[in-house]
Amino acid sequence: MNAAEAAADDFQNRFRSHFCGRLNAAYENKPVKIAGWVHRKRDHGGLIFIDLRDHTGICQLIVQPEKKELFSQAEKLHAESVICIDGVVVKRSEETINLRLASGEIEVIVENIRVESSAVPLPFPVADELPTSEELRLKYRFLDLRRERVHQNIQYRSRLISEVRHYLENKGFMEIQTPILTSSSPEGARDFLVPSRLHPGKFYALPQAPQQFKQLLMVSGFSRYFQIAPCFRDEDARADRSPGEFYQIDMEMAFIEQDDLFGILEGMFKHLTETMSRKRITCFPFPRISYADVMNRYGSDKPDLRVPLELEDVTDLFINSSFKVFAGNAKEGNCIKAVVLKGRGNESRQFYDKAERRAKELGSAGLAYIQYKEDGPKGPIVKFLSNEEMSVLKERLQVGTGDVVFFGAGKWERTCKIMGGMREYFSDLFELDNDELSFCWIIDFPMYEYDEAEKKIEFSHNPFSMPQGEMEALETMNPLDILAYQYDIVCNGIELSSGAIRNHRPDIMYKAFEIAGYDKPEVDRRFGHMIKAFTMGAPPHGGIAPGLDRLVMILRDEQNIREVIAFPMNQQAEDLMMAAPAEVSPLQLRELSLKLELPKEAKK
Image (cartoon, rainbow, N blue to C red; front, side):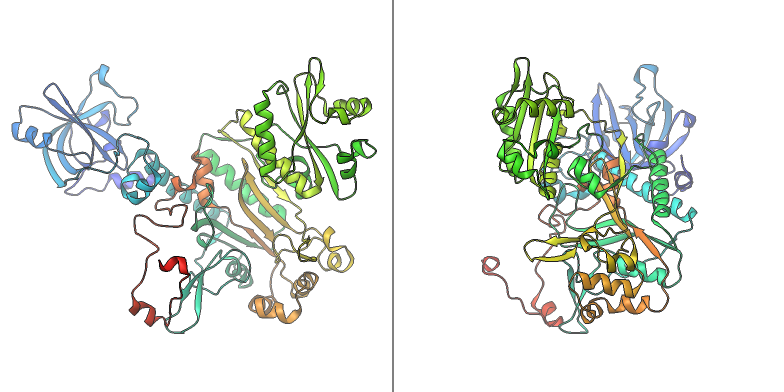
């Protein structure tokens, strides 16, 4: 029992003297008052057993037939009705002890029942974890939150936030709240806009992140800031992303380098893992992988390192190949990548057809492969390769009988991503350990990339990151070779956060934007308030903001982020319980000086 639980136990009033889940053999023969929801009710040969539930757990009650009025009252109780009872704690007999309950050694003989709220029949059961449609669960989320797993997820989330605060405060961080109503950001995802009544025709925006505010806090002289920050982005839903709003552990530090931030974050995740879970971190300190290396080896900048597969570059083996498809791609800017599946060379034709369909879904024209069978190599491209090429390939990839090699060829980035997608597709063939937390840092992102469609150089990640080499790099290097002090932290294939050491110097900022095609007036128009602040004394600073929802999802082994959020929206960004979004009255629109012009399909 922690200090908060102990303090709660001291709280007594007319509803309760104790909590259901904290009663044990130490309370034998003591009178108690407990309150909660009727979880289950069972009639066993004249005795009525009631499982009473509160937020701490379940306690078994016994209503004896001798007390006829009480017994009759108990018979009429419906599941999920709220009751308060007076009773006496007794020990269970040895054969009836329930080790699955914290209160499983005892039960309470009921002497009085007071019904505080009688429940009508429910749309789905709370006590039994029966399959229930997500639509129904979200419409009656207050009922869904009573179910054990979801209820525990939200309690866990609360404890984790408390541990985060404890850790960061001990590291010298100060919690500061930043505005919710702010200006629209010209970069990033789509904003949620809020019309202003006092300033007709003008709008606030809900913050996509407290990015600019936390940097300005560093300029204001605060050394270490954090916030459990609500963020708002008008994005589509995914299993690991909630539409509309989410929370992040937002952090910023002054006078730091990249290594300093890595140490703080790694320490925090280690602390949370050891205090909040039975999981284990694979490697500590976390591995650091450059963007170029992670794409070459895994085909993704958020790899699940638990999957025992890596991409192999075999471009050099086919420079002079008679196989024109490979030879044509064994040139600058293109590549040939291979993935080896051990022991899968004798799979059915259906296995290979499904793999090829997946490759086409990822954008590939097809999926070449070689099976190494007892009677020699087989596959659609074997006939195009010379014996020497087959021999060198076999030695390079260390393949043997029973193995299969899949190939992808084309532009470097596109091929890496397609084969990275195939690596993820094949990950289902492996039994991954859910108790393993395979963290890694992805570092050295390119500062710029070339946009083929627009035929121009643009920022590849975050325009406000400090370029490695600072002004000298911007003035002397090929922009596509410049790296930035940008980093992502990834766990088990899920990106928890991006971060950066910030560009705090106006001269470097103007030059960085100039390379991407922005002139000084445009930079001033978009980011003048930041530039002005940086001209008045700005310390070197950097930060990161791990996603709280995603972190809880990983630590709780949930596959969907909605399972760890108290009141989530559905995949269509609707709150089914509160019926939001909803129409507003003509009066409200007039007060905001707004007139609706709906698309035709919305008018029907």
